[in-house]
Amino acid sequence: MTWRASILSLFPEMFPGSLGHSLAGRALERGVWSLAVHDLRAHGIGRHRAVDDTPFGGGAGMVMRADVVDTALSAHIAQDDPRPRVYLTPRGRRLQQDDARRYAAGPGVILLCGRYEGVDERVLEMHGIEQVSVGDYVLSGGEPAALVLLDTAIRLLPGVMGAQDSAGEESFSLGLLEYPHYTRPAVWRGCAVPDALLSGNHAAIAAWRGAAAERDTQARRPDLWQAHLQGQAPARLLADPSRTA
Image 1: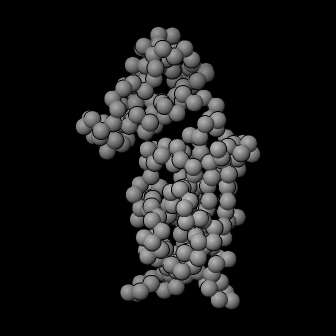
Image 2: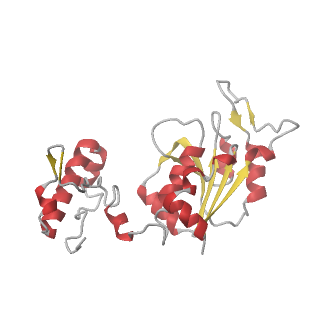
Image 3: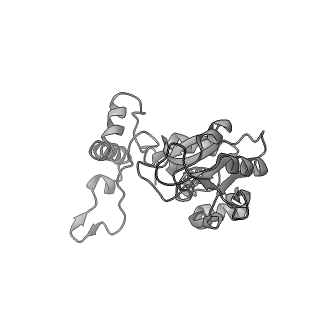
């Protein structure tokens, strides 16, 4: 069954964007996933199709109206649609690899892209919309964040990635950052590939990769490292010693 993505945005022309290329683009052409983009402006108020208004309580910026978003959702999304509804916002919980797996395992997602200062909270609550952030920074709108979320899920769909076993070794899959990678030439500008990777000893390779992943996680993501130490993340090696590639 085709995995379906529906997007509500003031800038529908921003999609599929990068998702129209490479693995995701080829999967889109093959019908592995589908994309429907709906213009929020088409449901705006009055002759000028207004979609926003000043915030109650004062403050800078404008807020997207609840009635406009509600009308758009009702027009394009069935009430019994089982797909999770997600609003991309820096106020949301941070997107995790587990979220990507959950979205990929379902029938698809419905994404609401905000602009201005955000969306009236009432429509988010009324429609049971998850609030998700792709990072601790502010974007001009939800569209780039929507592309990020979609990419994390689409690449996990069956038939999208060429080497499915590689997904199990990537950063965050086991609660650690992924180990470093090297390829030819074995010596480049005086820098040599670590001896373990050239040994042909699969146990030694796996041990080196596991130690490197732990080292880099401890140095770059102390939050992940602490979770790893506390047993909140799997403590197994990042590579299978039995692999021959």
